[in-house]
Length: 297
Length: 77
Image (cartoon, rainbow over all chains, first blue to last red; front, side):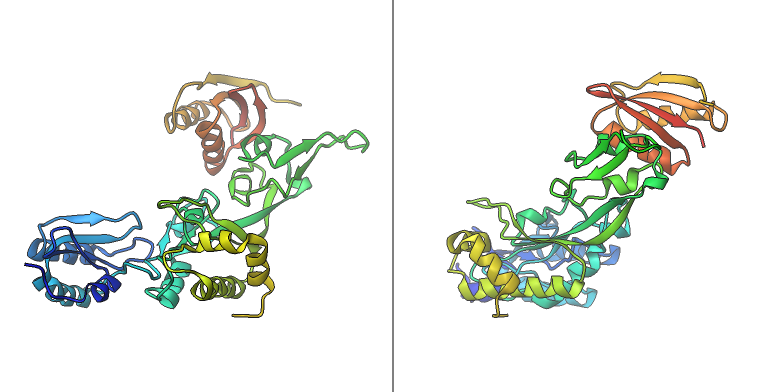
């Protein structure tokens, strides 16, 4: 028998009807895929009690308990809440925020992804949008959290600077820079005959490889901040995010640009149109101008 | 005066982390400031081994690109 329930309301809180119509998947809310051991135990307990004893890992670092009978959904939800486990989201709205571990534990990490992801989750989670809306925070240009595949993607970024006096001219940087942005120039004029290293800023992807690897600490961080990508999506019509602004040094500015981007999409996006496809419909030049210099918030 | 290369190892085809383990073992047999020459593969090897060597307190002093491998000179710290 088909249950008489408000499917849209259920979907909003991540209770998704399965093809076995009496059964639902309970999609839980995580931020950056973080859960405590006691929370995992509680989820395990609920999956055994109300599901089939199985837990599914979603592609967005979330957890789902499948095969929960519709008559048990509310009971399961209320038993999860005291452990700090809340329902997720499905449908046309802001989904759970994805993040890599970031500088807290990763050597390449440039920013604290967990704090930023939690801020974004707190501000925007479950807000209604024209179509699904996904945010990701990745610690550096290795892009493990796939910032460029999300509607909003924040990437930790830095600009390196070369300090001549420290350099031992080993040439490791030239050989490991992933985009060959570092060049070694022989000095033919100066008396010292010391070669110089220069950074081609247009080629530099703002990663931490040279600053971390340089044996003489000659490559140092000149600017540390965020690269902001917008309009990325996978799905039926994949599109990588477009860089809106590089090396944003102020977190306030980053938050303001994200806010503006989301509001713009909520205003202009059509039903079932992802942010990136809206950007392509309107045109990048116009969108960029609006977001960076436009008056509307 | 230039130090002479005390030991040379070819780690072409040796994957991470064994290439670093072998580099570390070779350095253990040397005296401070001695030079070790290591052949490392492109990709993961050249990205990871010199960085790990730095973390252990040694210094890479020359990297020569040989095509798909690199000749790396390390001074024991």
